[in-house]
Length: 245
Image 1 (spheres, helix red, strand yellow):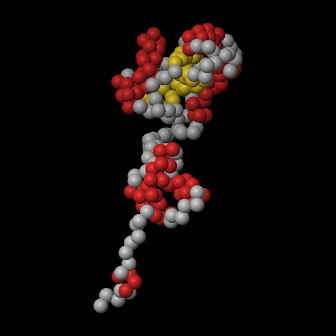
Image 2 (cartoon, one colour):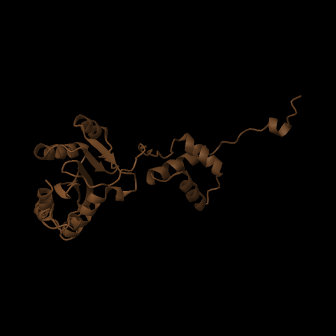
Image 3 (cartoon, rainbow, N blue to C red):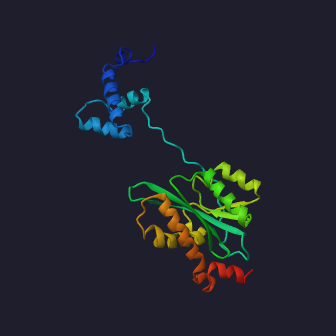
């Protein structure tokens, strides 16, 4: 009546042995928590287990051993802005992070701030962790004695795309200008400063403590703002600011 063969009608699914597969997969997952299904299948095949790959996959999914992949945060479309030198101070600042380590191997970061008008280095904050809240505190400290900039140019680091920084900028009427991902040339002023700071300080010294990094960086910062710059027609940032006041 159903045009169904007798062998298909009488077939009974064979699921015996799933307990053994589950035991092996759980033991393997506990030893190698970052192994996915493909690597586990290759390992079991090399160990001469005769289980079918589809059977292993079914048991693997039933045990919920699938690796969780953290989705990438989708960035809004970044429109490139021309890198134009401002005509007066406090129109545009550039900010960026750098990383290095102490002699003991402990990593630290620096938060660099630059005025695009005369390439004056406003501050270098040094610590092991510099979250968005710390970035805001440093910016507020500089604003308290220098004034508020019209815009701040930055990359798309996690500290710079946080809602906390975005809300703070709106409260201060500051425009946050994010460069396109993978285009550091769009933030060339601070990138050029980072290279000089790397060569003169971070690569030139072996640091034993964070306080030592801060002292050396602060002393170097004064020298940097007082020495001539080719981009400023041979003037120092301080001289250029006075001449173009």
